Length: 281
Image (cartoon, rainbow, N blue to C red; front, side, top):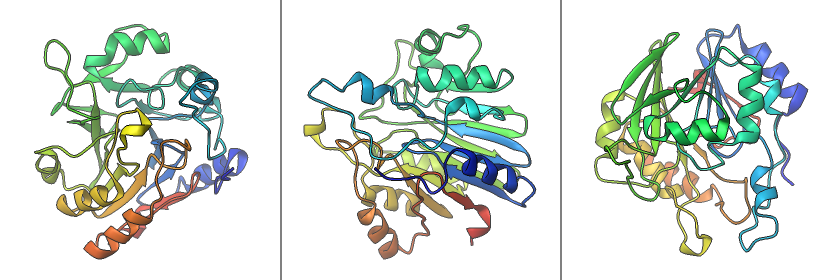
């Protein structure tokens, strides 16, 4: 099994040691989970820090065999200011991750698609009016972090009965930097145009692609992720949604090759590895 670059005590020590550094940092925690650190604040995108899916599908035709060891137990991340869930799939809205994590961070904000409010409250066991819900194009500020919701297509753009999007990405602006976390998405007409005005410094994009034999919704391929980064002028593209489950992963080689061809700055992280904004040009 793949070992994280840093895990448990070593990962937590690295996060603590980085606090005084200038700029911002992020750590990939596996699948689509990224921890952002900026001026003492901590934002965690879409954490999946359990074996719930491996256990759920163990005796089925779609086993979720884990490829990478768990980086850290969710309750040990007890310093979070904001947590997100981009959509309702378990690797982005996991009760076994979020219940202990939110209990350890009683003052953290929880940002979700407004369309998913009732589902989220039921799964996480929280008051229905507690999460902060957004829809495509809406913006809110939380302690100096400015969130803007961007519709995602997984596989398609999907809305509820009143037109609110069930799959979102988030552009988060803090200081003079902007990070885009796509959640799960495929390309759709207008996605790049939505993102260009945000002057994204770092784009966090899935690369596992789409294959009908997997019987799950698809994502950007490595080639598409590289091209989207180039199209929006991203200062850096970092891939996610690979090396978690054997049946639904992809090599980052295609992504790296296409980024190189396009002269698109990029970085492939190991789970538990830190990236710093001083790498931006």
